[in-house]
Image 1 (tube, rainbow, N blue to C red):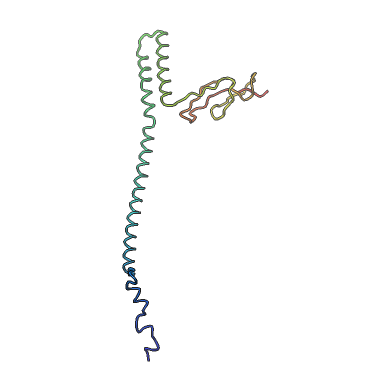
Image 2 (image 1 turned 180 degrees about the vertical axis):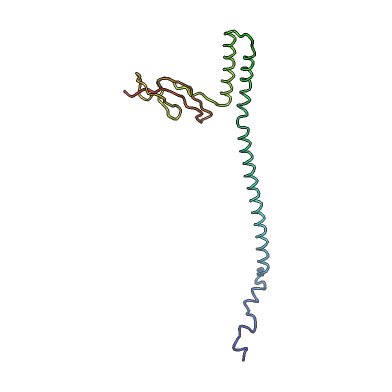
Amino acid sequence: MQEQENPEVSQPSDESVQAAAPVNGEPSLEEQLSATEAKLAEMHDAFMRAKAEGENIRRRAQEDVNKAHKFAIESFAEAMVPVRDSLEMALKVESPSIESLKEGVEMTLKQLTSAFEKNKLVEVLPAQGDKLDPMKHQAVAVVPAEQEANTVVSVLQKGYMIADRLLRPAIVTAAQAK
């Protein structure tokens, strides 16, 4: 009588027997589980390798940035050494003439100009009448002039740009509005 009252406990159902055994050539659940675990292990390994590679790339990039900061002015420094040498030689001359001093200063200025050009250090030297550009010029005074307002009247000090970045603005006086 107990068998009739509780049929679920007596024997496993046909469905559970079929799930454990292969049906129509399909792998069993255990085989599917082991295949899935193998794929998971493979994916985990690939993920860990990709993560390590990403970390290596980040580290190498940081080292490159540090080296770039450390040696950024190396080219400019190499170009400036001859300029210093010329100035030191000029100071060693015991009795220089005005002409020789002028010639030495001109040669040193040529070396300096060459070093600036080689390292893309460009003068900002606006001409009289040029439109005032606040990105390149700094007006320190506004003076009455016979030219259009907000134009350069005179340059008090040249400015400089390195590549496309302003290093120092040109100091100018600007024309006053009439």
